[in-house]
Image (cartoon, rainbow, N blue to C red; front, side, top):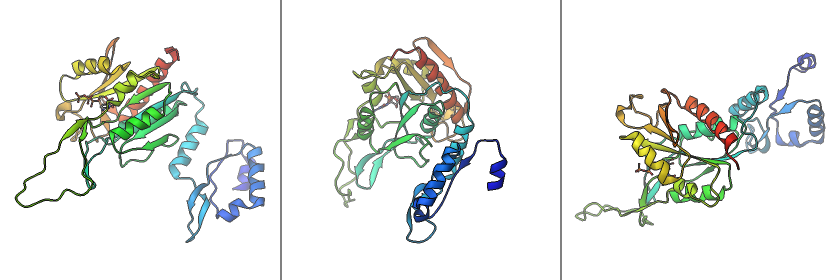
Length: 304
Ligand code: CTP
């Protein structure tokens, strides 16, 4: 490999993996500095456990997906229209506890929100993702805060202000239980099922849409099973958004056996004061890329 590298005129990326003591050694540090001076790029090593038992520290190979992302960034010579822009994205469901073992949730997978965060990062944005509980991985290159409840999501988003834009993709629970039980609720013979008293959660999008530190661009989603456009237009006004991405989450939407929520495809309409734009059905990654391009275009015309 080293002789091939001497003969190449291409960019070189190293993904080293080494025992932490070897990686920390003065000779290795000197060699690494020399390579960096020669223009060779590095990804990793990361901190963590080693292959040898009971060994941990800095020396783990970067995760394969991080290496792929580093290669993509190195080879991507396209201009970065969102460079220097800070964007908050919410994604996934929220979990509202009933007692220590039970909670109220919804079918959101986080796929669309995470894809949007990744697409914005690809255009150069400094993305801050606030995610409810999901089973998918954090997007590479995106600082992710993990939360459970709507109240925690609200607090996390507020703490990330100021920002140039905020995109609210999360399926936030509208209600939480008034008093989550501290101990597991037991089934008592003859007593019947418990009744849950609910209180309203903060509307995170509406709070930010009317906030003193409102970002220059605020985008919401509207998941509807009926009257899609009328409901989206009402949300646009009520929540103080610049546009609403409206999607039909009914089983009649014609998208896959499970519909939009949890699936890989989406069909959206962009509802703004300027009117309604209908996009064809496409993969969630493609919706994300088009939306990121639209956000970049809008931010160029927004005075911040
Ligand atoms: N949203 C939010 N906080 C909430 C509820 C919703 O930030 N407590 C955001 C969602 O992230 C989304 C938009 O508001 O961007 C619309 O969410 P949706 O669930 O469609 O609307 P609701 O406000 O819940 O209205 P309804 O239940 O009447 O459909």
